[in-house]
Image 1 (cartoon, helix red, strand yellow):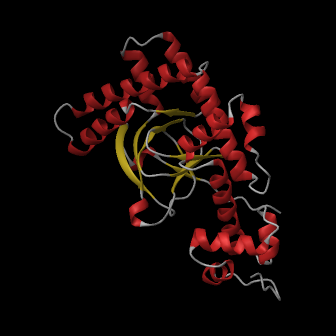
Image 2: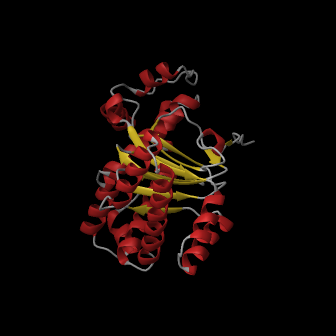
Image 3: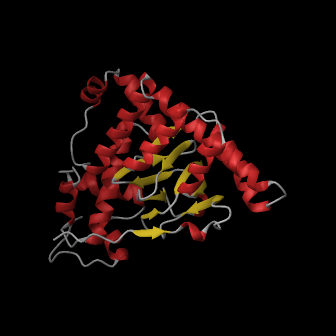
Length: 300
């Protein structure tokens, strides 16, 4: 039987008051925060570091410039790539009540298409992932964070003005990117990385994947490097080592069985690679995790 952890609902009352239901923040992401939903809307962007973003059952590798629009009720959580102090993941976010969106469209002359667009996002609980390559949205979120923190006279108006900038940015980029080749390639690479994370034991051949995406092998490697910071082969290896760490810590399976489960039939190669990536052998990792090994497991 599969055990599903309850997903906590984070209330907007933790961040803003009823008289001004909008707030901007700068968060240091960690491994302590659990996956959660909101009773508010969130626009957030990775400002520094690298890591993962788990959202609505999908897993993304993220780095600076990755922006997300998250409707009410969509579950998500960020994770830094490492717990090391020099590998921290910083995220700017603007959170606001659904009523703010209603006020914006009632008080400001925004086009009907925008109202329809954002209305459908909320109705269908559809989130959006975008790249802010030029830093436009990040600069806006930085200004909103400063306004929320300093609360100088007129800060509430600046918050609304900045939110409108973000909404226009999300709308324009979503519309223009929907039919662009770059957007399709980016979506294909994100889907590929998600596939590798979910089923790392599979054989991923660059030629087959490139043909599937309609790009050259060289272009495929460039796209994977841009999205993940590493080559296709290195990404597969990282996903396999990460999954083997999970299995070592959460199961009593023999090390040889775990190596096979993540795609390695050569146990000596697996042990050598595991130590290169983690600094310890699989047996040492399991011992530190406190998991009891299967009876008679030599594994190394």
